[in-house]
Length: 103
Picture 1 (cartoon, rainbow, N blue to C red):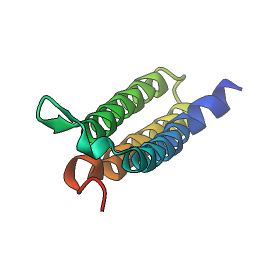
Picture 2 (picture 1 turned 60 degrees about the vertical axis):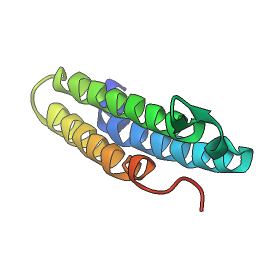
Picture 3 (picture 1 turned 45 degrees about the vertical axis):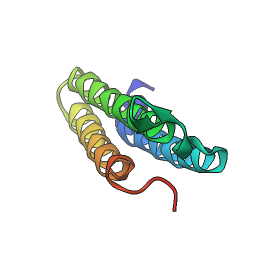
């Protein structure tokens, strides 16, 4: 069971994070979060960027957890999944910092 958890944790977290950011984007646009200012930045941007950073930190923690697996195939597969999940989380979440909020 631990083998399956390590093998799927990285990509599973990425799938959850992608869905969460997508849902928060829709909720934020529909609720007008892009019009509420907090410390010079919109509430919309605060929520999305902080969620993305927390998800990236979680993905980094999964990489560290995968590194503790017993050496061999289990470690290689878990580490590959975790690294791909971390890279995917970073790349697919980057638009919350770079792109326009609601169009």
